Every structure is written in C-alpha cells, then in structure tokens.
Image (tube, rainbow, N blue to C red):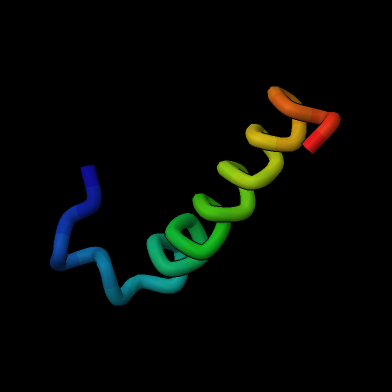
Length: 34
C-alpha cells in the first residue's frame, strides 16, 4: 500500500513510524496479561 515515491514524505515516514507502535498497542489490548 506504500508507494516508493511517497516513502520520503514526512507524512509517510510518520505513518510507518506509528505502525509498529499501533501493533504493540494491539498486542497489549489482545493480551493484557502479557
């Protein structure tokens, strides 16, 4: 879904940086006992 052309844009970089954080939050919500 990410275009190489827009991979250098601040918005795209910010989104990519937030992606792992969102994944971590999801894991915590799914397994709060972890």
